[in-house]
Amino acid sequence: MNEVNKTLYIPLFGKSYVSKKGIILEDKKAEKIWESEGFALRGKSKSKWLAYYMGMRARVFDDWTRDRLLEHPTATVLHIGCGLDSRVERVGGAHRWYDIDFVDVIRERRKYYTDSERYIMLPGDARETNTLDSVVGDVAIVIMEGVSMYLTYDELSSLFSNIWGRFGRVYLLMDCYTTFAAKMSKIKNPINDVGVTQVYGMDEPRSLTITGMEYLRELDMTPISLINELTGAERAIFKTLYGGGASKKLYRLYEYQK
Image 1 (cartoon, rainbow, N blue to C red):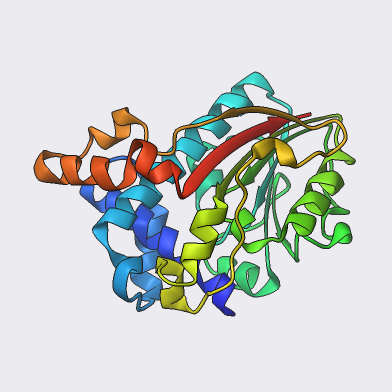
Image 2: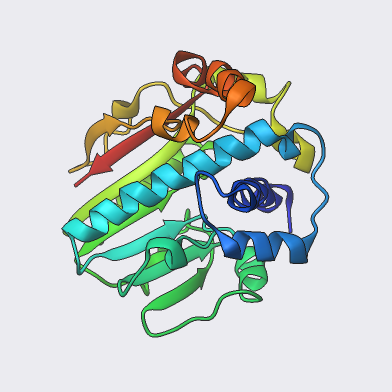
């Protein structure tokens, strides 16, 4: 896999790590895949602090997805940039669910997951309009976790327009770097440990002026309820490094709808 695809091992490690500790997120599939893959992460990409952060981010996305599915029981889920994530097993239920990622990633994913009538792994580049041609549904719940920072503004706008044009209603959650974080990533970022040096950031969530798209709100990627699952000095250190204002200078989580 190329450098961008290899970044999937960073959140995989994080989810496996917290799941083994019995905090934040239960993900036995991540534990199994991590043990099987044995990918050699280096430096900060394998730090426990980043693992806690990845686990919390995944849990926030899970909770948001679960809430949207309860509100829209016939919705179709598009998980763009799914990597090896097991969200479909954690919250998917009986909904039609598309896990979408590059061909090499889906090839790797098929070692651990199986397509069914309602669960489809879709290989392709989401930036290409025809990648979503086989997707069906009236209401879409779109998950973009760890994706936007690898897309230019024009690519992100084009992807949003493509999705917005295919569904009557859309609910989308996306994390993104700030422009400051994107600049700093050239110097210091855990993704550098797997070879990625070019990323993109966004400071104003309303700057994506797609017809019919409404920016709703910013979500907290490290809610205090999850930070409190850590104990002692770890809780205090994590809260200082990754919680609140310090983190928001680098990383944000935005919700949109049509």
